Image (cartoon, rainbow, N blue to C red; front, side, top):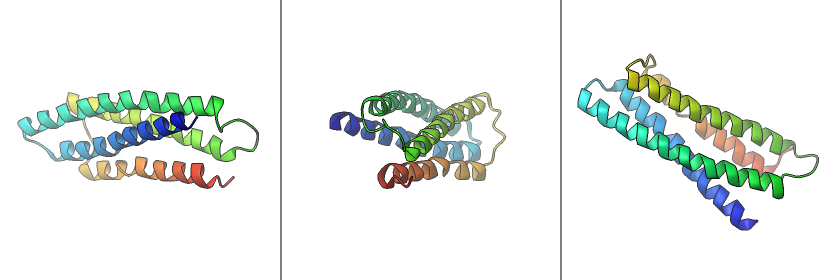
Length: 139
Protein backbone atom coordinates (compact mmCIF):
# COMPACT_ATOMS: atom_id res chain seq x y z
CA UNK A 1 0.00 0.00 0.00
CA UNK A 2 2.91 2.36 0.68
CA UNK A 3 4.14 1.90 -2.92
CA UNK A 4 0.73 2.94 -4.23
CA UNK A 5 0.67 5.93 -1.90
CA UNK A 6 4.18 6.96 -3.01
CA UNK A 7 3.26 6.67 -6.70
CA UNK A 8 0.05 8.63 -6.08
CA UNK A 9 2.05 11.45 -4.48
CA UNK A 10 4.61 11.51 -7.32
CA UNK A 11 1.97 11.67 -10.06
CA UNK A 12 -0.16 14.23 -8.21
CA UNK A 13 2.92 16.41 -7.73
CA UNK A 14 3.81 16.09 -11.41
CA UNK A 15 0.22 16.81 -12.49
CA UNK A 16 0.11 19.94 -10.36
CA UNK A 17 3.48 21.11 -11.68
CA UNK A 18 1.89 21.20 -15.12
CA UNK A 19 -1.22 22.93 -13.77
CA UNK A 20 0.98 25.55 -12.13
CA UNK A 21 2.99 26.26 -15.29
CA UNK A 22 0.36 26.08 -18.04
CA UNK A 23 -1.51 29.24 -16.93
CA UNK A 24 1.85 31.05 -16.78
CA UNK A 25 2.20 30.29 -20.48
CA UNK A 26 -1.34 31.68 -20.91
CA UNK A 27 -0.22 34.92 -19.21
CA UNK A 28 2.55 35.25 -21.80
CA UNK A 29 0.19 34.35 -24.65
CA UNK A 30 -2.28 37.02 -23.50
CA UNK A 31 0.52 39.60 -23.64
CA UNK A 32 2.16 38.43 -26.88
CA UNK A 33 1.35 39.89 -30.25
CA UNK A 34 4.37 38.74 -32.25
CA UNK A 35 3.47 35.72 -34.41
CA UNK A 36 6.72 33.78 -33.99
CA UNK A 37 6.72 34.01 -30.19
CA UNK A 38 3.01 33.28 -30.08
CA UNK A 39 3.43 30.07 -32.11
CA UNK A 40 6.30 28.95 -29.87
CA UNK A 41 4.21 29.58 -26.75
CA UNK A 42 1.23 27.75 -28.26
CA UNK A 43 3.45 24.77 -29.03
CA UNK A 44 4.76 24.77 -25.46
CA UNK A 45 1.22 24.98 -24.09
CA UNK A 46 -0.03 22.15 -26.30
CA UNK A 47 2.79 19.82 -25.31
CA UNK A 48 2.47 20.70 -21.63
CA UNK A 49 -1.30 20.18 -21.64
CA UNK A 50 -0.93 16.75 -23.28
CA UNK A 51 1.81 15.73 -20.86
CA UNK A 52 -0.13 17.04 -17.86
CA UNK A 53 -3.19 15.11 -19.00
CA UNK A 54 -1.12 11.93 -19.20
CA UNK A 55 0.12 12.54 -15.64
CA UNK A 56 -3.42 13.06 -14.34
CA UNK A 57 -4.52 9.52 -15.25
CA UNK A 58 -2.11 7.60 -13.00
CA UNK A 59 -2.57 10.19 -10.23
CA UNK A 60 -6.31 9.58 -10.30
CA UNK A 61 -5.94 5.80 -10.74
CA UNK A 62 -3.61 5.44 -7.76
CA UNK A 63 -5.92 7.70 -5.76
CA UNK A 64 -8.88 5.50 -6.66
CA UNK A 65 -6.88 2.44 -5.62
CA UNK A 66 -6.15 4.04 -2.25
CA UNK A 67 -9.78 5.00 -1.87
CA UNK A 68 -10.96 1.48 -2.66
CA UNK A 69 -8.33 -0.60 -0.84
CA UNK A 70 -6.63 1.84 1.50
CA UNK A 71 -7.47 4.50 3.99
CA UNK A 72 -10.77 5.65 2.48
CA UNK A 73 -13.10 3.04 3.95
CA UNK A 74 -15.37 3.52 6.90
CA UNK A 75 -17.69 6.16 8.30
CA UNK A 76 -16.65 9.57 9.58
CA UNK A 77 -14.33 10.50 6.74
CA UNK A 78 -15.68 14.00 6.18
CA UNK A 79 -12.19 15.18 5.27
CA UNK A 80 -12.11 12.56 2.52
CA UNK A 81 -15.42 13.66 1.05
CA UNK A 82 -14.20 17.26 1.04
CA UNK A 83 -10.94 16.15 -0.61
CA UNK A 84 -12.80 14.23 -3.31
CA UNK A 85 -14.93 17.29 -4.04
CA UNK A 86 -11.78 19.39 -4.39
CA UNK A 87 -10.25 16.75 -6.68
CA UNK A 88 -13.32 17.15 -8.91
CA UNK A 89 -12.61 20.90 -8.95
CA UNK A 90 -8.98 20.18 -9.96
CA UNK A 91 -10.22 18.00 -12.82
CA UNK A 92 -12.56 20.82 -13.85
CA UNK A 93 -9.66 23.29 -13.70
CA UNK A 94 -7.60 20.96 -15.89
CA UNK A 95 -10.42 20.86 -18.47
CA UNK A 96 -10.79 24.64 -18.25
CA UNK A 97 -7.10 24.91 -19.16
CA UNK A 98 -7.77 22.78 -22.24
CA UNK A 99 -10.69 25.01 -23.20
CA UNK A 100 -8.60 28.15 -22.78
CA UNK A 101 -5.83 26.61 -24.88
CA UNK A 102 -8.31 25.98 -27.69
CA UNK A 103 -9.40 29.62 -27.55
CA UNK A 104 -5.78 30.74 -27.85
CA UNK A 105 -5.27 28.37 -30.79
CA UNK A 106 -8.32 29.85 -32.54
CA UNK A 107 -7.26 33.42 -31.71
CA UNK A 108 -10.42 33.93 -29.65
CA UNK A 109 -8.97 34.66 -26.22
CA UNK A 110 -10.87 37.51 -24.54
CA UNK A 111 -9.10 37.39 -21.16
CA UNK A 112 -6.33 39.72 -20.02
CA UNK A 113 -2.95 38.66 -18.71
CA UNK A 114 -4.07 39.92 -15.29
CA UNK A 115 -7.02 37.51 -15.33
CA UNK A 116 -4.65 34.64 -16.11
CA UNK A 117 -2.40 35.68 -13.24
CA UNK A 118 -5.36 35.21 -10.87
CA UNK A 119 -6.45 32.04 -12.66
CA UNK A 120 -2.96 30.69 -12.04
CA UNK A 121 -3.53 30.85 -8.25
CA UNK A 122 -6.48 28.43 -8.27
CA UNK A 123 -4.48 25.17 -8.27
CA UNK A 124 -2.21 26.50 -5.51
CA UNK A 125 -5.21 27.13 -3.27
CA UNK A 126 -6.80 23.78 -4.15
CA UNK A 127 -3.57 21.90 -3.44
CA UNK A 128 -3.08 23.71 -0.14
CA UNK A 129 -6.56 22.79 1.07
CA UNK A 130 -6.26 19.19 -0.16
CA UNK A 131 -2.94 18.66 1.64
CA UNK A 132 -4.34 20.15 4.85
CA UNK A 133 -7.38 17.87 4.64
CA UNK A 134 -5.25 14.76 4.08
CA UNK A 135 -2.63 15.51 6.73
CA UNK A 136 -4.67 17.24 9.47
CA UNK A 137 -8.02 15.45 8.84
CA UNK A 138 -9.95 18.27 10.55
CA UNK A 139 -13.29 16.45 10.36
